[in-house]
Length: 302
Image (cartoon, helix red, strand yellow):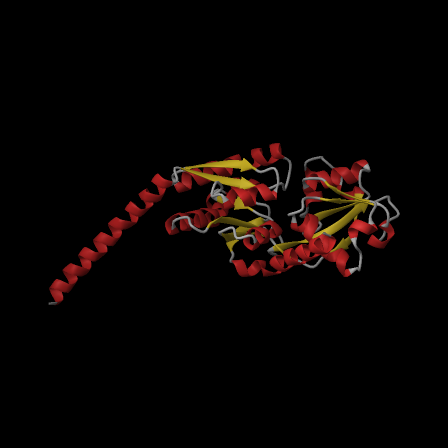
């Protein structure tokens, strides 16, 4: 009896072992190409150049072609995932929350971790250093630069902060200008199109301003922060919930291994600086609350 059990157990293990490769081949046949999409964190040419080696890395690790698409805005990323045309996507917390609240079936799997070890960033209002503005209250009747209606640090958090100050931005400011990217918001401020701009900031060493300084697009010391929000949960990478379990596991592991196995590629691809870490939906519940707040504001204005 014991010998028979051993034989049966061996046969079961062998059949299970044989099934895993078959399952992997099944998803590779169904998904010969995976689409990775990014929102509007930076200008398109810079993003394409920065992420090209990472697409090659993912293709090699997964054994299928991974192509990169840059969406015009976060809404396009959301709708692409809703339609099933985008398999993997990089979201801001706000666009992720918007996707969830509108029924898009996606899951966050890794989160950016910044150089100081935090898994988030701050929304800030910045002005030119040589301006007279010391607080938001000094900017009544001036022009405000926001980024994208689905950007957390570029729209949701600024509006939430202004509401706490009992400020209705549509009445308080002369004009609200949506600039499209965080970089464009700084450029609009630099050129005088707006008098104050919303942006993301993690520390003096890590922010959109610092990156633009490093790329010679703007001088960090030409600007001042006049408001900083509470810490916001960082940006997640997501995949479609209905992808095969084996594929989701392979994608997650490729991200987790990147800093160790391909450090130069990771350095260019990461928005944080530290290795990506696993994350679940619970980390973004505050972002969901921010989106609900924004929706209530829009209902009041309509």
